[in-house]
Image 1: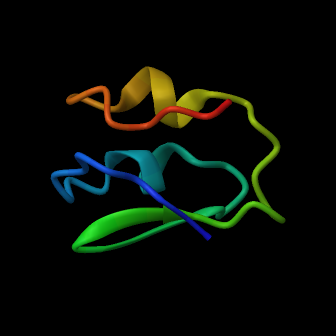
Image 2: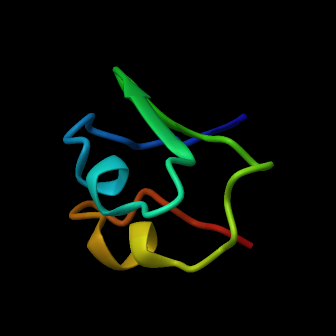
Length: 53
């Protein structure tokens, strides 16, 4: 799991992820096995916390 530093816990990334790769419990965490790097979460993050390389 990748922890997202700077996450404010709004859950928007989790809601837009079509692959159920993100869980938010305080801060967002991305399951690397489910993530296909579509970048939707990056586009929708209101605080630019998500950075998938």
